[in-house]
Image 1 (cartoon, one colour):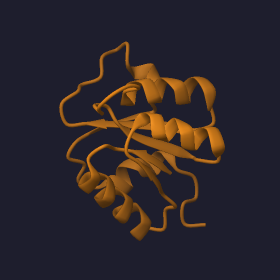
Image 2 (cartoon, helix red, strand yellow):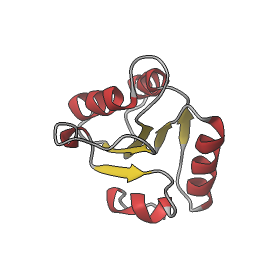
Image 3 (cartoon, helix red, strand yellow):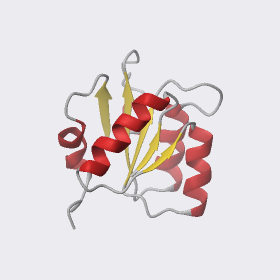
Image 4 (cartoon, helix red, strand yellow):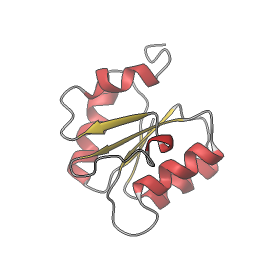
Amino acid sequence: MLIAEDEILIRMDIADTLRGQGWEVVETGTAGDALAVLARDQQFEIVLTDVHMPGAPTGLDLARMVKRSYRHIKVAVMSGQHRPTDDDRHLFDLFLQKPVLDLVSALSPLAGNIDD
């Protein structure tokens, strides 16, 4: 899984939680960094991104680019403030409202056999 989250403590908590359940995780602090990682390695099953991040591209821009260029990758977006509009819904496979109480369960429908 590739995580794009600018808040370091939130990103670390998410990554630690997922790693504790056996997920392989790569962390980035911006959508731009996530795109750079994807340019080198497209073997991710899921990209998880926050909607609101500083600078450009935004989390929704990242979701749009992943859906367009890496169709095999599932996209989950999360936000504590943003509510997706009908126009946004094609950009992601899953929307998570922060705080996410059980991230592993929330993301599991997007994942294949994580325990393998």
